[in-house]
Amino acid sequence: MSQYDGANKHFYIATANLLNFANPNRIYYDNAPAYSNEDYEHKLQGISDLLAKSHADIMAVQEVWDSEALESLAISLGFKASDVIIPLASNDKASPYTQGKGAQGTPAVGIISRFETLESTLLENVKSSAVIDIPDIGAYQKFQRPPLLVRVDAFGQPITIITAHLKSKRAFFLRDENGDLLEDMDDPNIRVRAKLRSLCMRASEAASIRMAIIERLHRTREPLILLGDMNDVTGSVTTQLMTETGEVNYDKSMRDVSLFDAARVQARYGWMKDVAYTHIYQGMPEVIDQLFVSEEFLPESKFALGHVERVDYFNDHLKWDFADRVTDHGIIRAKIKLYG
Image (cartoon, rainbow, N blue to C red; front, side, top):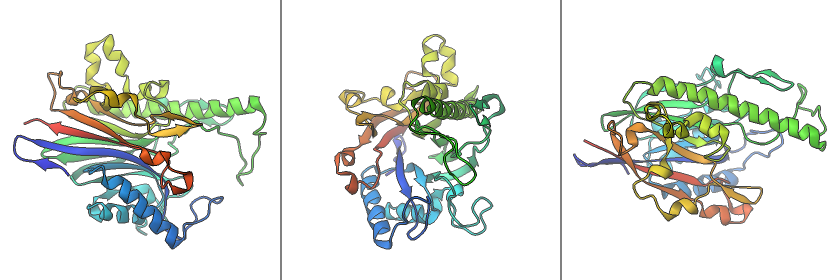
C-alpha cells in the first residue's frame, strides 16, 4: 500500500496483461468461446490472487474487454470501482466510445489508481510525423489499441502515467471485409511480408508514443512513467524508439526527454536482473512487459524528485500447465520513493 509519514512517501506501480479479461457470457472474439459464469469467477479469482501480491497503488492493465470485469477485480484488490479508468472497454451506456458494449474488435488498456486523477487522455491518433505506409495497406494513422495517459496526484506530486499495448510480432495477413484470408499463410515469403507489416505498425506506434512523451518531458520537471506490454524486449529498436535511453551516453542533455528502464536504475539492482522474464515466446523467456521512468526518478540527477527503490517480477505462474494459467504474462512492479 502507498505510505506517507511525512519524510517517507512511496508507492507501488505495476503492469499486467490480463489475457482477454471479459464479462461472462459475452463473445469477445468470434473464434473464442464466451466465459461461463464459472470460468469467469475462476479467472477473476486467479488474477486477483496474482495481483494481490503486488500491493500496487497504480496498476496498468492490458487485454481487458469490459470495465465491469475490471471494476470487480479492482474491488477484490481493495480499490474502489471509481478508481478504474478504461474508456475503450466501458459498460456504461452513456459512453461515446462503446455505448456500454465494452471493447469491440480488440481489447483495451486501462489504469487503476488510488491517487486522485488530474487528467485522463486516450492517444487514439498516430502523430502525423509518425505516420508511415504499411506494405499493401497504406497510411497507419490510428493505434490498434490506443494508449492511455493518466496524470495523478501522488502525495502532492503530479506524475504522468502512460500505459500501452503495442502491436504484436505476430504476422499480419491481409483479409477481406468478412475477415477471410486473402493470402497463403503457409507461403514463407508471404509470411515474411506479413511480419514486416506488424513491425511497421509497432514502429509507428512507438514513434507516436515517443512524441507524446517528448511533449510532456521537454524542459519540464514533472515525472513520467511508461509501462505496459511493449511486445518486444527492452533493447529492441521499437522499445528504444520510445525511450531513447542510449542517447544519454552521447549527450547528457538528452536526460530531459529520455526514459530509463526501472530495473536498471533501481537502488537494489542485483542478481534479479538476470532471472527476470515476463513472457515465454516460442519456448524462450523474455521481458516484453516493461516499466520506464523519467529523469526525475534518477537519484544521480540534480532534478531528482525520487528514485526507484526496487523492481520485482511475479512470474512463477508461467511455469504452471497452460490450463492453470489465468494469464500468459508475468507482472512487473516497481517501488518508487518520493523525496521531500
